[in-house]
Image 1 (cartoon, rainbow, N blue to C red):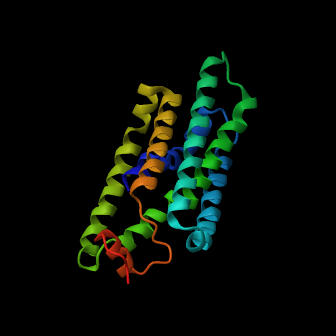
Image 2: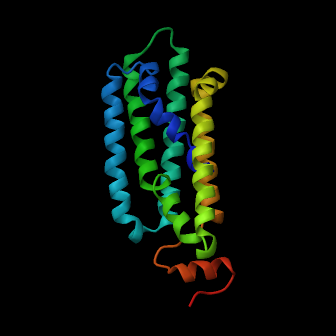
Image 3: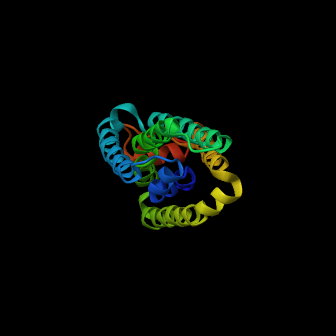
Length: 200
């Protein structure tokens, strides 16, 4: 849940229109609608392929796509800072970067942490543990969203997006090392995995 929010998703969604304005994209309100539409479509796609592709694979693909797109967004802002005046020809890069980011997030890091949360906790602690996860998620959402504008000022726009990119790289590494694949396993088999036993 921490990594989900540290990817910058809520900051990007809440400030999408401002980001596009800062990126000198002329139709920033239309771009925000497109971003929302992409998220809906690819969340539906993720729901359809999750059981076939596997949770872990989708999380890794999702994290890589998000890392590439936030890196590209950082490059875009860096290039813009070098130009003496706004360069409209680069606006496509801002829209493409956010589109790839939202697509990646919707395919993996959006829905899958919530699904895995419901699968990995033993029944006796599921209620409390799930509540802690939700609290962690929204606490991190608050921290990132609250500090986003300050980060843009302190680290520059490019630096902020490169920080998000580094978080996305960390979430890929975290997934590869620590996240179990729960595709096709019963809750009992998943619990047995955490106990270090083979499932029934």
